[in-house]
Amino acid sequence: MPKLTVSKSYYGSNGTVNNPKNDFFVFALNSQLNPENELLFITAALGFGCKQLHGCYQQVQEIVYLIPVIDNKYADVWKAIRKLAQDFDQECVLYVEGESKNTSLMYIRGYETSKHIGTFTRISASEAISSGDWTLDGNQFWGVK
Image (cartoon, helix red, strand yellow):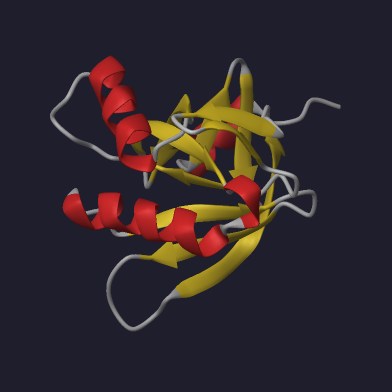
C-alpha cells in the first residue's frame, strides 16, 4: 500500500533534523513568487526543508507544502508555520498526526483554534476531483475521510 512520502529526517541549516513520529503540516502560501522561489523562501523561513506538492482546497488548485514536525518540537514548527500563514493571509493549515493520520484544520485567526476533520487517506483521482479537496504526491491522491 503506498504511503505519503514523509521523510523521517530532513537536512536543515543546522544539520539533520528528525521527524520520528511522522507528523506533518500541509499548507499553501499563495504568494506572488514562482513555485521555485516560494519553496526557497519557505525553507529559509523555517530553517529546514519541506516537500512541494500539488493540492486543491475548496475547488481551488494550488502549490502546497508538506512540513515535517521536526525533533518532536510541535510548538516551534507550528509557531513558524503560523507566522508564514498569517503573513500571507491564510485561513488555516492541515495537521496530520503520524501513523494514525488523524487530521485537523488548524485555524490561524478567530475563536476556533483547531477542528478534527477525519483521517488523511489515499483516494482515487475521481474521488479527489469530486471532493475538491486533495493533495497529490507523485501520482497518488490523498484526502480526508
